[in-house]
Image (cartoon, rainbow, N blue to C red; front, side):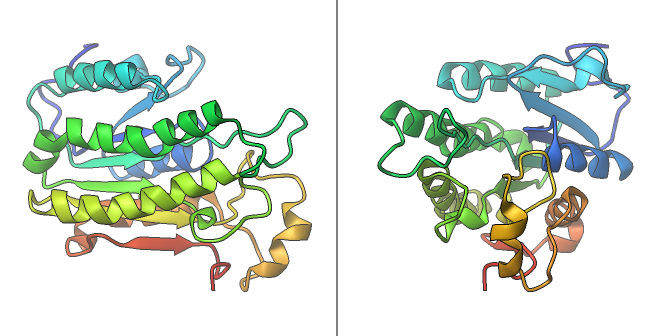
Length: 252
């Protein structure tokens, strides 16, 4: 049944943005393995060749760079929930523009339209999505996880200035949201990944960054997904307003 959740489905529900690769893809698998129903959101439609049996029923096409489309997409998702509670929202989607030659865009070279787009996707979309789903999250005594970055707390060799400052802003927003949504019984926390072995890991990271990591290795998407699941589980019922560093000690 496409468009609405099956009436007989009583699984916990999570909404996840940015699920097509890396951390997002690992998170989909982690929650699905635990028996959750996972609804994914991205600017792309559901790929026909994807083996995920839920198909387009559990995928929502939203362009997070457009405030108008976020409003439209959130409204469609509320219709799909059909009054059911929402147990978790993971704001994982993020963008980090590069220069034409693939190099880092710093605060001198980042065009203003790029700053605006980055902040819309990385900061404004998460608060818009959370506000839109406040009622079903309250009914589900739900948890929100914002995905920040180690770049939000230190100048990074590869992450651009707009991305880094947007992630710092999202960290501050997480604290504000924890205070505001906490009064509704909704917990809001963040994770700040460091260097994770995904296809977006910048070339040269091994030489430039690996020596900075006390554990001597990069993290895996599964390790990040495990932390996200913990934050959304009953084991973290009193955790609110935290930002957990997942970087092997790189931040120390």
